[in-house]
Length: 485
Image 1 (tube, rainbow, N blue to C red):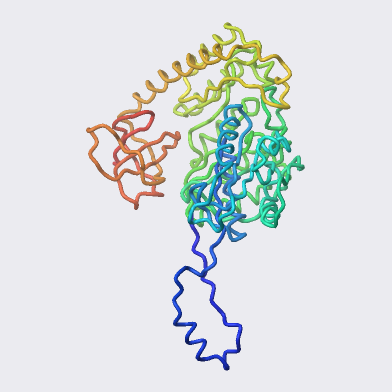
Image 2: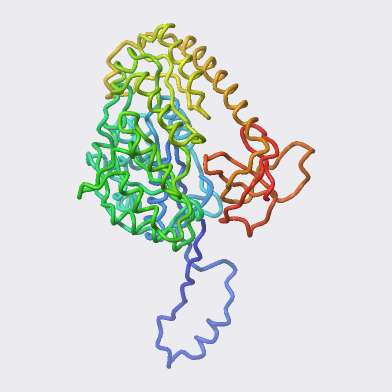
């Protein structure tokens, strides 16, 4: 998003009355180059979850207030920020690699100066690695933990004044700042944090160590934020938390009561939330999804493993039979609810039998989709002190088996939806159009169904932000092709 800056006036240092001729000459002077001061430019690259995406919007908002203009590439930027994730080693490796590439980055024509850009490493990686970042990457200007993001404008000012290798990673909890911000990647959909941090301490997870213990925002502040979003055109909000259904406001309000309040907001059309923890999910939540008309029929409920032994080692605080009972109650309450999940393969000591328990549970539950990851030790997490005794090749093989299993389930579920009519919210013009010659060249709208399926259908800009009934005609690579009816 680009903001138009106000033009600065050229003012003569001489008295106006005594220099009327000179003033006329100045007014008639046409410089050979643009004398208007250029605003500094900022580019943020985001890795990881929706909470990181939301944090990047907050950072953009703060930098815009400091006079920066968002740009879409490294080469244009005076300030480059990597907002990072440490949940998996693969995500970290991508960041290290990209940061190394920027070591000798030169500014393009649109940047303010010829000096190398400032580079900031923000988020979970900054908290996890601390000053080791500067040893590994001396060209990084500053690092900032996820609980310290409101310090970023001050860090950037200090770097501009000549300081470097600055750190702001001390806070264990994020201050519940209610600063208003205007920058949003999307106008139709918005993410809203309802809590920060986590108290679960799953043995494989770094989150409590880098994002701190769980704290919940005041419900009235959440409601006010959503009302402002709706006034600015938002039709759908996603409530975010490391574990949203453990939300408890400072006055004791539960997540269910918060959902009921959000559901009453005029002009809001849809509500989503993520991520839920099985130990805190139950019949009351399922009844709320069924009974509140704006809450969408989609639940992301991480399983992680189908083996009770591995679940105990993971400190997940539920069993496979408990999880199965949750799914059974959910589908009895909301028969057509979409269920998605997370699964980890190759956790330390996972046997072929443990893995088979997971595969069979997947076959039994038949998730709509699943994010399936290979285990990697994370600093601070308890499991990192246990030998990572599953060979990488074995992890890859198990990962591929589950991906293939889920792919078959997803394809069958998708095929069963052909011919159905789904309620779809138009989000934007679709960049990727149907490839089959069965669908004629046209402008296509990208939208999301209530179950969070991606749907494209013929239309125009006027359909963005509108909810339509769309008949599903086909599917290409998990994207449905539909026709408005």
